Length: 506
Image (cartoon, rainbow, N blue to C red; front, side, top):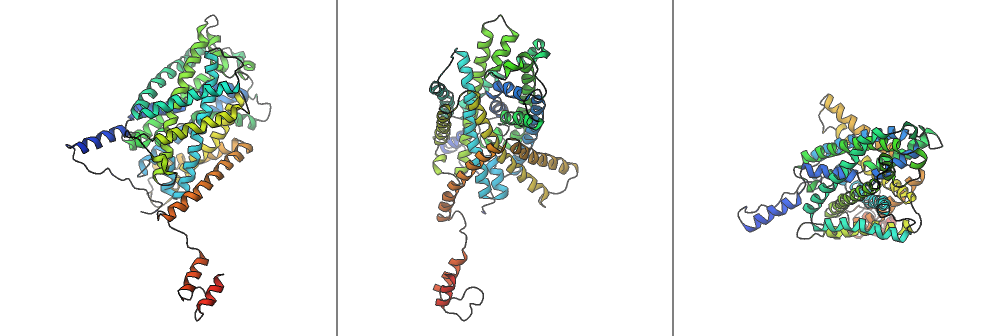
């Protein structure tokens, strides 16, 4: 099998009536524990985290143009959902999602680079989610002027409770995810519908409130808007856990993204009309202010939405903990990541990936809370996550584009034009997001990528030693081997002895 070709390895046959056959069947059922409903819930739960509860405040910093930018990003996210569905149907082994697409089309190095970027953004994104989640825990329990270390302790609860749920197994994770999706989706939908009856037009800020050019305002809104839609690929990354992935991954991705997009636009616009602009841009918990505007004489309103945000954050972290784990497990199974990430218990849970994927954002939050506070922590982590996820999106899009323009794909008229539009727009969308993120964030993401390449150097060297990857043939070594064997090598070598050939190689 070549390094650019990935094949699905079927399960070993077993006697259905025997104990081994029954065990194999139960293991497969545990592995494929996500049906269409649960996969859609995973997409919604991964997209709609605590970011939505901070989103209106960030968008308000750009002005009402933020709603327009959010709508454009929503369209781009739905195109990506279609793209991931197409790739999952086409790639024989799509375990790992974006990583698998790139490796299938471009080989091991491209697959590793995509997987590394996506894995980093996944656990860094968990840090961003929990940093926003802490705001609402503080609001729920009336915690004022909390120290950085105290907030770090709260963040540890938000990170390690979902880790414990994931360690219990995929079925438990799916059940927990579905419950939290319902608990957060309905109250948010309430704000997005009923809240419009309380909106005051004077609360909306100017179209461009960034204080700079239109481009700078778009940049402010674009970063947080894309971050809010990260998770569109959740079903694709966890394809191994989805029943009938060739069909359900695409459906779950599009349905979950579309529902989340409608919710985002309705809710964000409503909150911007419920809370005065100057208040909105300086709050870390805008939904508390929104509920207080809707029910000014109800003491429980702010507490209620804070509780919803806390549940929402736990649900998002639950789903993303699985995504972090599945990403590292898929790469490690192909021997392109440290092997301990494949370690699993009897239920098939990659426990080592869960522990490491939770410890890293824990350390990142410790560092950030000792250097920054408030929205600064959230904004920094959002920016880093957006750029590192844009690269896997870009690689997936050009993988599909390569397939479409190659001779492997027969021209099929409008269907080809449709697929080219989806792939081409996804390519441009990913490039635009990277460009709009700003020079400083792109620079920081580049450092992360370079660090990953150092790890790849050692991993690839090990694969060469084990014969899992072809060793490159160096010109100097070829000449030296020919000299030692007494065989002339290279131009003009005829008639020369070993000493001359050896000298020439040196």
